[in-house]
Image (cartoon, rainbow, N blue to C red):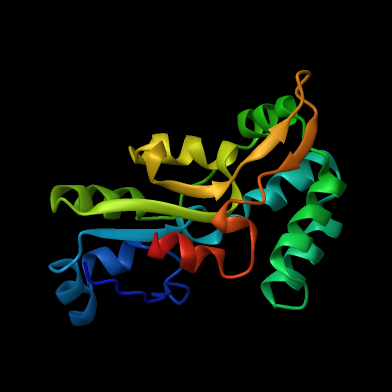
Length: 184
């Protein structure tokens, strides 16, 4: 199987909507050759970074957003930044559920239509994120993407639902993890 990796950005349009209605020739030709397409979730499929929403809910939004930006700029390795942010947030299982109830993920404009079009063309959709599986599963359900098509970080909790740690064996918990997940 041929693996084509490309970053297609839609920031000029602010949504996927324009790309669906007036796709470029490159996108049109690619769609006819694809078996699957992988989407980043935070600030792409969804309008916000899930970790930032959870951090704001927990009252540590500014500190976590600064760490997120530093990690995205490559100044801290992703795994260390993830561990540090999670130690600041200390999200319990209940915190995550309550955050999702109070602030459900907001999909980017046009993404539902894009996923529907891909399904009609029998093109699989995968969600790949450095965020948390528990926060991405509702997005997958809303888009009717199987949960088996999610590559994201798994958080671990104790018997009482208190945060313990994250699964550091997930591709998405380390630098370059999204590319490894795509190659998988």
